[in-house]
Length: 257
Image (cartoon, rainbow, N blue to C red; front, side):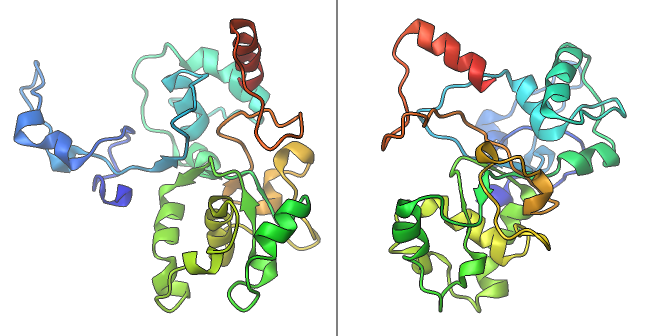
């Protein structure tokens, strides 16, 4: 449904809207030009951000835009997360910027998927990988990732058309019916089948970003192995740590940022 939102990606605007926003009862006139937004003014959604209803934001919208789309009105591109944080202070209070240039956009036009290509424990082996029949999906194409991720529009469209183009019209989800936490497997495995998420020659195993120094390119040139949410699993429990006091919340905000 999200892929149907908007029709013109050439205007450089990036915000989420739905066709109902442009219905007669919801239209708004510009006070200077008296122009009214219509369905044709709504740009397409070009990032799909997966989060939980229990997630709390730890960045501003402008910081999030910078992380997703890169700096605007400039040719300089942050080479690392540290440089990106430094760039934030320069871009937060600028005048409305121009659309990003193509060379910058290509560096940021990536999905965020913190994926791994092999099980990391017995739970993952028995209840996830082994629960998928090899006749349905070859083991070398099975990947696991955080269910909280970012998909580019092109990757979202590819996944939506997966059944028709690669599976002879059959849906992918029945192959994962017996898998525990199948949402951790579906999107990464779909991208693997599409050839978007993959191991390059010479790399036999791709681990999670937090457990390795492997670079983004080890999972595909269109993938950024970065988390969209922060969870503390350091206690080794079935559920992540919870934060109940103001002091704990301040600490976790600092770590998450």
